[in-house]
Image (cartoon, rainbow over all chains, first blue to last red; front, side):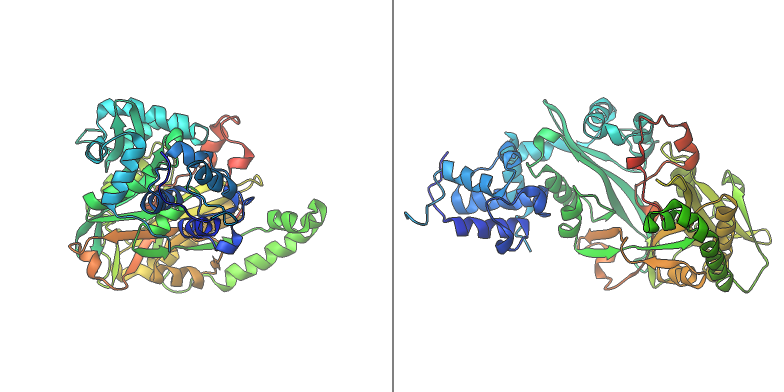
Length: 89
Length: 399
């Protein structure tokens, strides 16, 4: 199911920073989950809730496990039509 | 702080991820019965098999009820669906005493989630569900999988303090100098300095207390160890029955119980274990103690002095302990034990407003390693374990 709401990449990074308790300045596309201590079960719960509340998107356990780095989260949202390209709003 | 949804919202999110309704998820979470034992064993073997060096069936039935009224000291809760046991978490009921009066709390332990369900937030959900069910839940210790849950799902946060008393220094010198020959040359001087340290801190005072090792607790009387914490302290009420269960009947690990006597009156006990270390040496881990209220300093000093002698006689490199107890820590420091700032197991809890602990602002806790659920193989057990089960990589760091 695609999202009815769109967000920018910087808004996604803010969501991740909040969910994983990591400074947004530390989150870049290539940053892996092993580099982020808060990328764990509590992070999964916080992200699940954020996607549901802000984007109307379900994030399954399998989808969360497949996300190995920040870029994968952005790609996931891109595929769901939730990520707006800042250059082409 | 990250925003974590409340229990109702979390139930809806987690249930959806599992293909269940919220009501189905809640009813799937229940105490395990005897019919669940096989599924729980299989799940633990599948998820933790490499770390299990003990008879897990015997261990689970020693620790948890599994539908029986005569075994265990708590429930093992499972999320069980027609798909099998998806996840589980154990509880151990503890009787508390002291400043909170007589009340009970549940220690949580042994949490696991089937690996294909990681990322479903089932672990945090189970914690929340137990918070709903019980008046007071506690956790001792954490690992990389549970760190966040421990720090963020419990209102009261404490850390135990780890102390060590070094007896020999050769292994540390080898590690630090990176040169075995040089370490061997320097070690005797280092050991002499350590001996001097211990002599400077040896216990002074009443020498009338004798310490002996006991193999059974029956002859010590029904009230042995049942010393109520002072009014300004809170801790588990130790009892002969609890000690017998936790220290002497544990199928996973072997411990030693020493008793301090004034005449024919037992005035304190200490539980310890020789633990192997990577370097090939061993240390003496001090796991638990309690004393008669009027004999705390003298009894604990006598027990610790005896432990040091036992450790030295067994060629241990050090003694080590983790504790949260101001009065005991004072005695440890007096006897030369040194605080290790880098090791600190968490002790956390949450209570509903109706629980007596909730009203206490800053209770003085008496918590020891035995309040947790982590057991290590003793040095004797290690010698009989097959080397394929435990490699040097699985052994704890040298003290």
